[in-house]
Length: 258
Image (tube, rainbow, N blue to C red; front, side):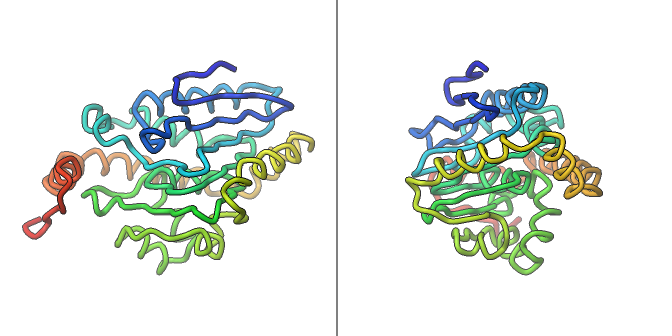
């Protein structure tokens, strides 16, 4: 399986495809091209009968800072066919096991994509955040549905309404991640667990994941579409314009009149 962009490395061995986010100089922030590449990679892995498990990993210092804001503002996701939304639909409907290895900051979609992974291993330096309100927009990737389910309403409210980050220990207690290890060990642990999964019968893996997620698929797809429509509309509104202008100008946003 070939690399689809220079920032996304793909490697397949012994039934496991590993997708490495490889843009450390830009804090592994996602561009439109990277979202398109990830959506295509997941589609290929889904169709490849020789691949049983997908691993998503970053660097031991950074998982992802979320969107590359400059690219995001040049290529805003104004329709549900935008690459970012195609990626969300691909990862949420992927039927094989997904293992994620997370170290350092996981911002925005760096956190929300984890709701769609089956096993998540984190470094003790991991920090998760969903600061959508602070950017004048709304949650995405069905996180407005899945965060309260997984974390409980109170903690989800702190994470989504205040946009406050939470660390690996809190994420473990909430059930967002499966285990905490030193950052230098996270990717290796994810690979070991993926190899264990790949050695099991694929039919059993598919059936078990399907049963665990049964009843959620339609709800997730509906909520993702609702969020995406609202997200696109809110991007054009004054609060988002102020938030992104402040970010680019490296100042604190002023929402007093909004």
